Length: 339
Image 1 (cartoon, helix red, strand yellow):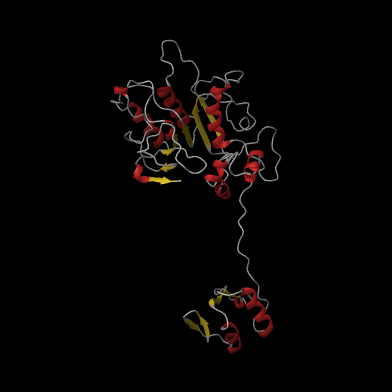
Image 2 (cartoon, one colour; image 1 turned 60 degrees about the vertical axis):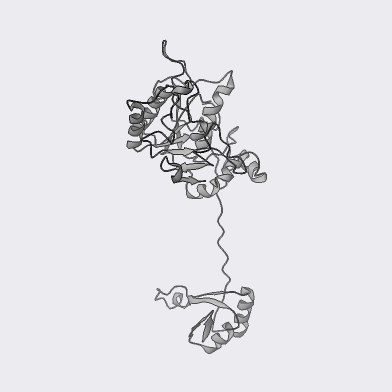
């Protein structure tokens, strides 16, 4: 009899039992019990609470011809996807600097599953973009705003106005060099879904005469809707809010947002950018269409920020709505998943 913890298992050979019973064997079964092959069907798995090297040595010494070629099975080693981009390689050397956010969200493990797909279109609706940036110029599907046809502005001065749109686009799908690849000059960033494609809509151009400036809300919704229906965007990234004061009494904005979602486009919103419009008088402030308190927007993904220690790092985000970096399948704090 072979003792397996509190159980006893009869093996065909008492000599084998006499050796194995000197060890705390916890598992002894055929490795391929479904096989009818004369060789494969003789493979066994043995696990023990013991020094496996001692067990193998004992088998080789005392069970020659009875158990042949015992081997220690190594634990599987999972190699994470490792881009060549300079800032990513520097991050691996110093995880507290550079692209630490990718480590915090376990991007390498996600890259093992997918690095995106060129057929996945990410639309970013933001202020301006530096379309000449080496990490972005090969990722953009158009060289102009798809709705207005206005070419992307080449930054020459006041570069700060390009920071946000460029950064958001870079976070999403900046060019990322695969392992053993050749990094293009200046394209030293690594991004989340870097094999995906980018579509960019600019919100920063001066509107026609007699139109309030900025009109981020309605033009933003127009561009988001255009991205969904005319550009077949799979994902829309939004980091802005409506600047129209007063509630959406007629439900127009809600209808636009719902129509985008109905078309199968996912909306990702930077909830950390605040809940209310700064331009409205306090008595006229109301939740903008992508806030968790706005009715009818139950399938939007909301995210807010953390610092390197995973402490909540809000940018005008009410603490009673979000406690830490979250993604919500529904706009209800109780349904939020802490990341």
